[in-house]
Image (tube, rainbow, N blue to C red; front, side):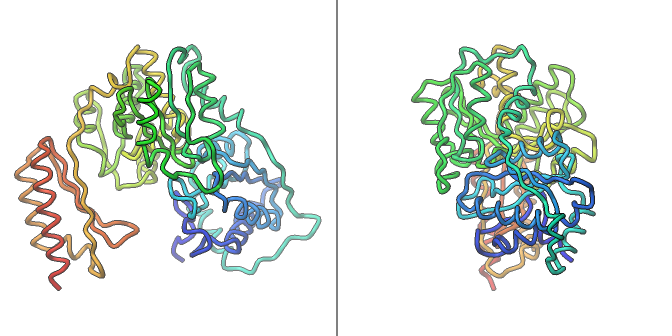
Length: 448
C-alpha cells in the first residue's frame, strides 16, 4: 500500500474534499488508537490551530480514539512544536496536531508525533494504514477511552524560555510579534514579554477564518510596516502553526530563514557547540553556503522539505538545519522546527554580542536568485529536463557563471510545473540566464 495517509506533514488537503473529511478523520483516529492502544493507560494528545474546521476535526479524532479505547488530552489551540514537546514530556504515546500550517483557513491537515516528539516510525505508519482498511469496531463500553482538557500554554512558555541562558534579558528591546492569527496568538507575545521586551502583538485576533490572511511569515509586508511605524528594534512573523518564522530588522528589511540559520550557526560556533555540518536544501541561498565556508563550517544540501533536513540531521547526528522559508531545526534545543525557539536563539545572540539584527546579518551576503515556474500541461517533467535543448542551456549558463553561481531545475511536487532557479553574484546575468533557460523549457513544452 502506498503511504497516502502519512508523511512529515501528515494528511493534508482542502477541508471537506479529498481525505480531510470528518468520516476519514474519525476512522484515522480509530486506527491510530488500535495501534497505540496496546499499552495500558495509553494516552494521545490533540492540539490544533485556529481554523474553524479544527473544532469538527478535533471532535472526530476524539471519537475515533476513544472508540479504540485510548485516553486523550485536548490541548486546544497550540503551536505544532508545543505538541511535540508535550507529547515527550507528558509521556504520551503520540501527539496529533490539526493544522495546515501556512495555508489559508479553507485547508486543514493532521500531523503526528511519536512518543519521543519525532515523526512516527515507518513501522507504526504501516500498521496504522493496515488498520484503516479494516471495519471500525468500537471496544466494549467498559474499555472506552476518556477525554480531558489541559491548559498547557504556561508549560510551553517556560520551555521556550529555558532554551536560552537564564541571565538573558531583552529589557529595552522593542519587538513586533506577528502571530498570523494562528496557534501562537496566546503564547508568543508572552514569551518575549516575560523576557523583558516591549512587545507589540499583531495578528493575534483569530476568528477561525483569518489565519494567515495577509499576516504571518507568508506575508511579511504587514510586519515591516508595523516595525517602521512603531520604530521597533525588530519584528518576528510566525506562521499559522508556529513552526516557522521570518524576521524584520529595524529598517524594515526582511531576514529570511537562510539568514536566521546563519546567525544561529555563528552563535553555536562562538560558544564552541556547533556539532557537525549545517544542513539546508537545494533552494538555500549560495551566500549562506559561502558565508559558512568562510567560517570553516561545512554546509550540506538536501531535497526541498524540512523532512529531508530532519532525516539528514538524524542520520549524521548533527543539530542545526533549516529552509529559506524560515523552518529552522535546532535539535540541541528541541525535536522539531520551532519558530519561537529559533527567534529566541537570534535574540539571545543579539543580547550576548550587543548587536542589532542588521549587524548580525552583515556577515552573509545573499546572492541574487531568480525562480521561474514553467507550466507543463500534460508533459512529463523529467522528459523535458532530460532533453538535449534544456541540458545545453543549463550547461552554457553554468559555464558562464563558473563558481560564482548555480542553476537548479526541479519538478514541483504538487503542481504540473518545472521550477527554474538561477543564482549568482551578478544580478543582471542571473536574470538573463534564468529567462533564457525558462524560454527554452517553454518552447520545448509547446513544441508538441
